[in-house]
Length: 192
Image (tube, rainbow, N blue to C red):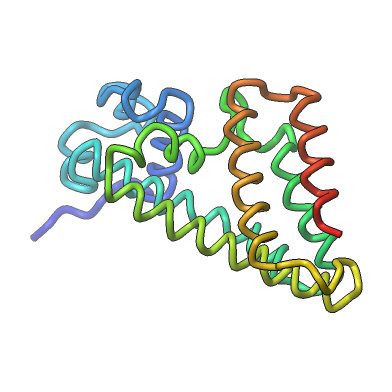
């Protein structure tokens, strides 16, 4: 009879995410992960496989956090305000957690996606979903007269998706910098 797991898998994945977020994939050692996850080697390998499989599971878990963004963009009310909220909330000092900067997904795009097909596929799903959510908010904004009827909504959604992740990549290097806040204001001015 298999032994019952004596730890919460979601909490354990969140702890692993902290390590990957702050150290990157390459910088995170198995021992770093074990210490943060409060697991022994056997539990890590039995539950998640190796470091790479754990990383993919962390990305899958982290992608669930985007649901909050999707709900804001696909909700009701002002589409333009929803887009502004998503951008400004991503600059909130509580996002990212203390000791981390940027976005785990954006960090993975830079570090792992060019070398790992599985990582790239997961990230592409997130990007496509975010693009669709921006499109939904932009259509709503257009219907509400907040965006010109002549604007190419798809192109604007592409721009916002890239701007969102580009901003988060730069935030990793320069967290809390005025340049990032100014970037957000200029990016949001394109939604008219």
